[in-house]
Each structure stands twice: as C-alpha cells, then as structure tokens.
Length: 194
Image 1: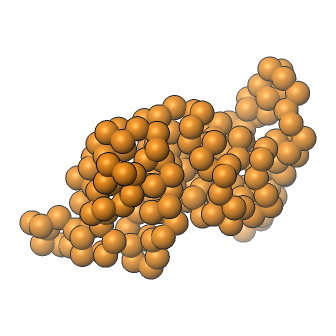
Image 2: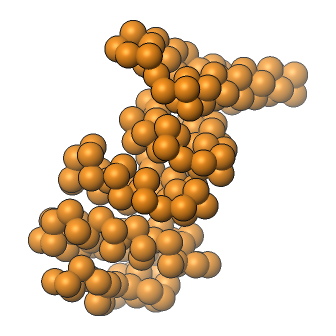
C-alpha cells in the first residue's frame, strides 16, 4: 500500500486491483482495501495523510467511481483526529479541496471538517460543500422534500452553536446562510413538483 517513505508503493491503481480474488460478480472488495489503507496509515502516522490525499486526487475514471461513498477523508480524520486532516486539506488548491470533499461523509450532521475548509477555502470547495450536503450519497425513506426539511432542521443547531460558542468567521457564517438558503430553495422546488 504505502511505503515507509510515505509514498504509494503498491496502492491499487487499476479497477481490477480493487476486486477481490474470489468475487464472481466483480464487486470491489472495499473492506479489505479500507483495512489495508487504515493499517498503512496508522503504521506511517500523520505523514500518510498527504500521501492518501495525493493518491485520491490521482484517481480517474472507474477507479475514482469505485471509491465513491467510501469517505476516505472522513476515515483519515477518524484515525488521526480533527487537527491534522483539515490542516493537510487547507494546503491544497480550491479545486483539489472540492474534489476531496467527495470523500467526506455528509450523511449525518454537517462535518466540522467542512466548516474549517469553508473558512479557509475558496468558492469551488464552498459550492461543492453545499452540493454534498444537499445530496450526500445516502438513501432516505419518505419524500425528498421531507428528507431535505430534516437536513435543514439538523443544520439549525450547527448555526446556533457556531454563533453561541464564538462569532463564526465571516466565511463560515455566510456559508451557513448560503447552505440554509439552498436547502430552503430545494425544499420549495421539490414540494412544487409533488
């Protein structure tokens, strides 16, 4: 996976390498791959963060599609904590940050990682964060407008906490307003379709 120097040594790069040997359906073996990436990252420590980010940015086509919904950036944050991963992401370009947001889990509450990126990031990452929150690559039960309304309601405590704890940086405050407005527009649009 990752060499001791922090470079990608045997990282799978073709779609055939992502398949398990015994899989008759040719489905990716995510569990094995994720466990191998996790073990390699833990063995190398924080310096592996940049290696994994670079590797993710280098994936194209089918290889990138195989990792859709795996949320490797969120897994890195779980392994190394809330400081080193956002710091590594903030060193990336706006376009790279936007690309890497595809590997952040937006299925629950708005990730703190996203707020930190929005604070220091550019317009492309900000737009991608809004899109990922609206469409988090997860299923839902019921109507889509109701699902969006639940997401909107879940955002309110984040907005309140951001202003209660400390005045949010202007980028974060305006992002939270933009995200709330985007949710309101999507809810209204979807209810008119019904």
